[in-house]
Length: 266
Ligand code: NAD
Image (cartoon, rainbow, N blue to C red; front, side):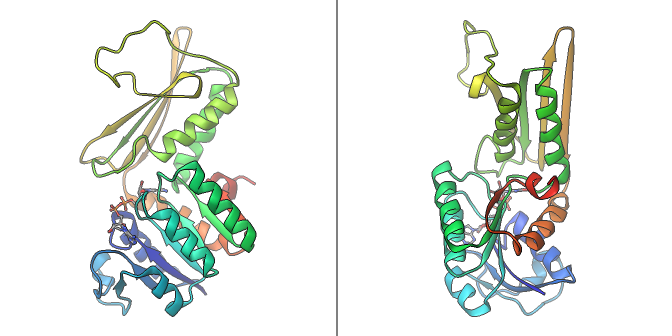
């Protein structure tokens, strides 16, 4: 049995993870951490009756008391790196979905995990369909190098663009090689109208509206044709098979694996 603690347990993703871990036959939910709801039983967070696991605010204390194998983190960009380091220093393997970490934080975590010989999975998107979208986009970019990315999320999302959009731009840039797109003389009449510009001029546009969950369209343009590759997470259940896979696989890893594709396509 894999002993799991969930951080960010009261959040939209945290609740879904609590329920998923609770229902998994090879896992035990041993702790739940959030800065909200201290002392409450977590069962009602996913519509169940009380399950005997209560929300606590102090991660360090929860890790010491419950001795988990894995910490699953869906918190916020400002606290996630510290949570990961706290877990690693206690010998606990992090599975992380929180986006918005800086590359410097990521490097520090890589060094710490490697030094301690502990596995850690960080994935900007745990939905299998989103991982396939990125793979297909990288393939298309070899033949249709003109590309723009539109990502659409609910209006409570803290970071923009999404981690998935950045990752998509990275794989597209790597696949199409040295390439500069766009009209250098174009003028933005409203700043930001053309979106954020990634390496080589890949534009990323972020839409935020209530009603959305997590969506992305990658549009390629060529002579007389366009190709659109679109993924829609229409509910947060879409991320759960990926999270379960990561919890199971992190037990046998050493160092940081960044991106679910590295667990899916080996
Ligand atoms: P949310 O705001 O609903 O939840 C975040 C939770 O973290 C809140 O309950 C908050 O109280 C809690 N929190 C804040 N600071 C904390 C701390 N120090 N310790 C413990 N808990 C703390 O956000 P959400 O929609 O659930 O998203 C969470 C993160 O997951 C975001 O970064 C989002 O971009 C990311 N996300 C990733 C994926 C993926 O597949 N990787 C999918 C969806 C969302």
